[in-house]
Image 1 (cartoon, rainbow, N blue to C red):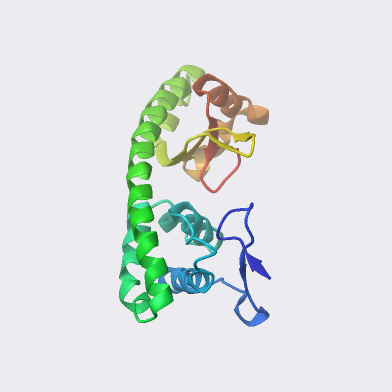
Image 2 (cartoon, rainbow, N blue to C red; image 1 turned 60 degrees about the horizontal axis):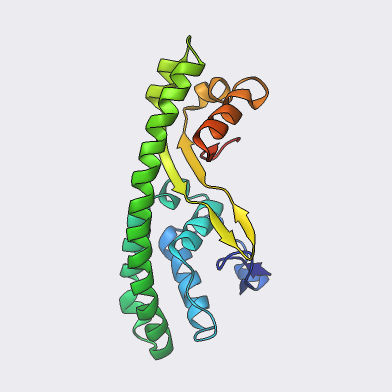
Length: 198
């Protein structure tokens, strides 16, 4: 089996059937397995990005941690003493740490942009829904903002993930998805509910 921690365009970490089930693993154990597996492939393969770790955490049920890149970075730093015990793993890990710090700075800048988009979204929600707009807008929170990317000639639009309480999700989405499509069109980013429907 392959564990896609490097993104869909690169081959994932090999896993035997005894270690393929990742459900129930604590975040620190999950990250340790990724780091350990990736360091065995060094120097051919770089360590996963912070987003790669976040993706693995999200898929393993750690959804709140998956959008907290500062905490992910802290958990990764905590693995440094263990990684330094092995020369190859230590070198790979040290090189990756500099990349993760740079990525954390980029995430902070994207979060600021995402926060501004959420404020614009709140205004659109109020204008679009005179009856429930104020309640929905007051409940909206930024989960994550991902800028548009262009890979090998394929463009993925910018994504704005927002937290919406369960009881308001239907009203936020609108009949047949009409409202969320309107927000996507007017903001110029793909609006999605974190852990829910588009």
